[in-house]
Length: 420
Image 1 (cartoon, rainbow, N blue to C red):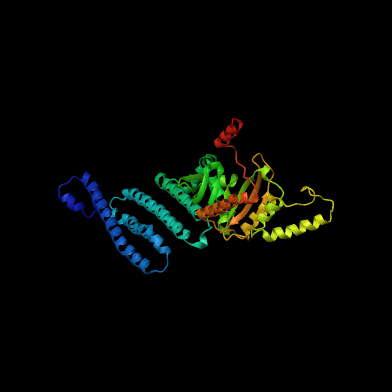
Image 2 (image 1 turned 90 degrees about the vertical axis):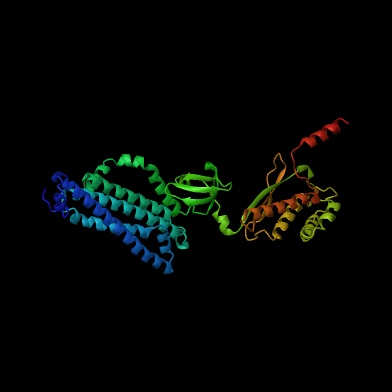
């Protein structure tokens, strides 16, 4: 053995067999490398990270806080000792040059792992920072981050295979090109999810915070996150559902964002009137209804119009079917309309309509269509309940009856009437 190691002479003087001196020297070199690495890492973290931490505290910017929180700067600090060890290999292991390529590969693999970890931490810090920035609210930050992360892992994998096998990266990529069909088959969900994700953001179909209803997947709640292949939704019962991103492009779903942004929520409900209770107004009912302030001006004006029309037909007689007459259901519809227009919690800037729908076996539906001046769910339900409480109670004043399917008590009463 060529004794060029600084400890070789001392080891030889200790009467150690020359066959072991090289390995002992190599062990000493390895210990020195480990100590050098630990000292460099300690100094790098103590000095570099401390300086950066102090600068972050003094800085008014917010991005560096997210980077420090995700330990990005600490990851950079770990690269310094790795670079020092890599450059020191040729000096420390100069007496055993055949071991240098082995240790170089080990250090390079370590550096690649550090770089991938650093990229991952940087992307996570950017996600957190940009998600708090209103300027990037509609930007697919998370999707782009995941794509970059996948590319980083792919690149690192190719580099590691190239280093460990001694094959060029171009040759490895060429081999992968031959298996493109298999790769597409393996990663088809990710590819489809990526394309769907870009469509979702391009057409602004859904974003974090939106309330969506997706009947096909039993989803009804707020969007928590939009990932590469899935979208996570928290339902109103506090369960969390995961829906494929492709479903939002291929299937139909309801996004309630427009309602939230308008500041109003639609009320659309029917009141079923018993057909047998509908009739023309007689003098007694007219005198009672004209006392209602909301419809008093309308009734007077409408009656003048009817009287004027009927006066042109002198042979009408006393039959109510001859000529024009007001009906209790017609006045009830007008009353609902005026009641809603004067209601403080109804938004009159949007459609307000009370209409009669086609008769059904449950009676005649009178549809109430308007918008509450709130999007808060509990307040909205309270407003709607108060309105319909009043409208249900008002039917008796118009001598109208609400339709209700017979119950047990109705059937018992009917039976008792038949069997006195």
